[in-house]
Amino acid sequence: MTSPTQQRLRLSGGTELSFITAGDASNPALLLLHGFPSSSRTFQGIIPGLARVAFVIAPDLPGYGQSAPLPAPSFEAFSGAIQELLSHLGIDRRFIYLHDWGAPVGLQVAMQSPDLVSGLIIQSANAHRTGFGPQWQATFEFWSNPTKENERQATAFLTLEGTREQYMGGLPEDVAARIKGEPWIEDWRVMKQPGGMETQRALLADYANHAARFSIIADYIETWQPPALMLWGRHDPFFDIAETLSWMRDLPRMEAHIFDGGHFLLETHAEAAAALMIDFIERTRRP
Figure 1 (tube, rainbow, N blue to C red):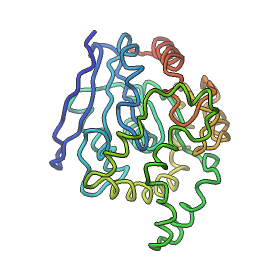
Figure 2 (spheres, rainbow, N blue to C red; figure 1 turned 90 degrees about the horizontal axis):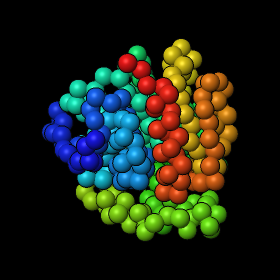
Figure 3 (tube, helix red, strand yellow; figure 1 turned 60 degrees about the vertical axis):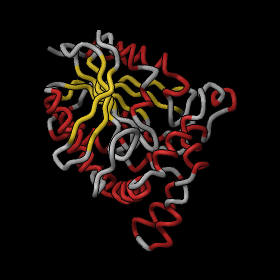
C-alpha cells in the first residue's frame, strides 16, 4: 500500500490542481469529492483505512485547499478538471463520494461515463428539491432576481463565523466537542486569497443550474441504478433530512445510515463511516 502522496496537475487551462493519492493503483479507484468550504483535508481521517482496499484519489477542487482558482468557476468547469485528473491517472471504473459542492461535480462525472461508475457514496449531497431547507430562501431570491442586494443577502454566510457554522451548525454540544482543532480557520484563510470569494459567489449562483438538472439526474439514477451507500448527519442544517428519503426512493437497494452528526460528518464519525465504506467497496467491487 502506498502512503498518501500530495501531487499537482497542471490543467489544460493552465491552472494547477492539487490532489492526494493513496493505496495500490490495481485496487478499485475511489474518488473523494469534498464540499464547501473545505478541501481534501476533509478525508484525512479515512484515507489510510480506505487505501487498504481502494486506490484513493482526493483532489482539492479549484479554489480550495492548495488548488488554484479557475478564471471562470462553475461546476461544469470543476467536473472538467476532475475528468482531466482521472485521465491523467488512467482511471477506468471508479467509486465516487459525493458531498455538498462535490455532488454537482461528481454527478456530472458519473453521468458522462455511467458505465464506469462502480458505486456512489452519498453524504449531504443534494439532488432533489427536498434537500433545500429554510436557510436557502435568500439564495432562491437571488436566483430568481440576481440583484446586488439579493447577492449580498445570499452570500452573507461568507464570513469566518459563517465558515465555522458549516462545521458546528446544528450539532449537539457533545458531538461538536469531537471536532479536533478549528478546521474552519484554514478554510477561511484560503477563501480570503485572490480569487477565493469570486469562486464562492460564482458557485452559489451556478448551483441554480445544478438544481435545474435535477430531472436529468433523476433519469440517470432511474436508468442506471448505481450501487450506493448513504452516510448522513441528521443535524445538517443546510440539506434537509427529507433529502435522504428522496434518495432512498430513487435507489431502493441503497444502504442508508443516518448518524448523530452534522454537515461535516467525517469530523465526528470518521471511524464508523470508513468502516461502512470499506465494507461497501469490498462487497460491490467489480472486475
